[in-house]
Amino acid sequence: MQHIRMIRRGNLWKVEERGCRDCMASCQSACKTSCTVGHQVCRQETMQR
Amino acid sequence: MEGIKQQDIHTFKYRDLQLVYDVNSGSLHAVDNLGWEAVNLLAEGCADEKVRFLLRGRYPADAVEAALQQVDMLRREGVLFAPEPQLERDKLFSTGVRALCLFITHSCNLGCRYCFTQRDPGERASHMTPEVGKKAVDFLLAQEGGVRREIDFFGGEPLLNFSVVREIVDYARENAPLRGLEFDFTLTTNATLLDDEKIDFLNREDINVILSLDGRPAIQNRMRSYRDGRGSYERTVQNITRFLESRGRENYYIRGTYTRYNLDFSRDIEHFLALGLDSLSLEPVVSQGEGYSLQAEDLPLLEREYDRLVDIYLEQKEKGDPFLFYHFLLDLEKGPCLYKRLSGCGAGGDYLAVASDGTLYPCHQFVGIGDFYMGNVTLEPPVLRREIGKRVVDSAWQREACHSCWARYLCGRGCAATAYFMEGALHQTNALSCALQKIRLERALYLQAV
Image: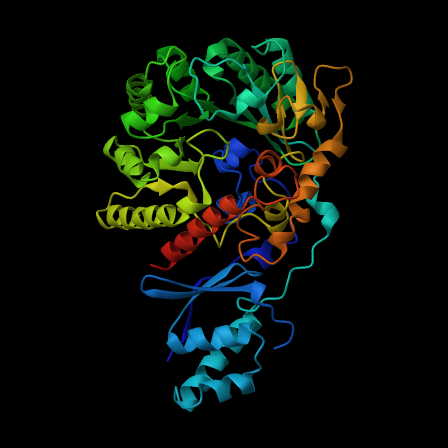
């Protein structure tokens, strides 16, 4: 029986080496004035799909 | 397992689910009762043997064994009890500026009560000139790193100085390809001055638009009135509707602010939906002002409002009519890399604000504050005091409370401006902002699981 079911496989490790900074940078463009970073899509990942 | 710290695992129950968020990998798991107990005991530092002992008699031994094996398998995959990432701190401070927020004008036809631009004590010219705007573009083109540059048109109300917006876009589009670069533009507006000419331009140039609207008529008119006191709701909604129809309802965000006057803000989200708006952001007010500032005692009510928002979100999804709510858009699988996540919002590093006279500040909220003056794009050569910006970037690392917080890779480590203006120092955290952030994140994580 499955007692622990993975819902989402996080990507923090996979992309941690990059730091390419090709993602959206500005508050308005990236975060819609909210000043948080969790909601962005990594441009590298988008390109690789 | 060695080295497990509770700060690396966040377990929480929400509605019908028991969830485990693995902080260091960013993975999310759902667990049954046995899984819940086993993970929590392991997170407290218990060895497998102790977990077996503590759960003996309450669960079948083979079930406990299976749960421990599942934990071990996920741990070996690096998605549960993942170790703390080792990062090079130097990489956090990027070498170049990639985005500028341009104060196209410091004037506004509205007099929103919570507007932070009222902090700016500067006596500079209200409107940015085309020359200053072009210098800002040149400054951005000369920066190192990446191929994309961003300009946000901000204010005041940028449409009051629309001809300069147009000149800057034309100039950037003309010059960027010469350096192998591309521009993305965003414009934040109260929408009251949108007309056919401006709409055509914004659509033709594929400019992302953030439209400020707080919600129901009484809410909008109370906080976002014209300077003579007239309400702005009618004109704003009329123009937003026309504008969105013109661009097929793409590339926009409704950006609202809620205050203590509308603690029932889920009603404002419902109002947006009734207007056919489906790309939404509603932010808590962060400035301090008589009557409208949120208080710690409002948290239980606010928590219930976010619960109600979850209901609305799921109902709309069920009906086949989903909407985007910014704070529920959590991308665990394709989010930004850790360096981006840990460098805060980028203010002072790859993102700066330019006042109408060309002076530079770490972000739009610091414009006009002398201690944060970072230089000037109009000087030859332009002056850029990176050390000032670095103070802001570094402050994300200096917030002690963040080091052990489960949300540390999801929240951008808070807002430096909020810390400075609300708490008096960059390295502080604002307890109310953090509490709201965690309330929203738990609900966003739940929505990933249903």
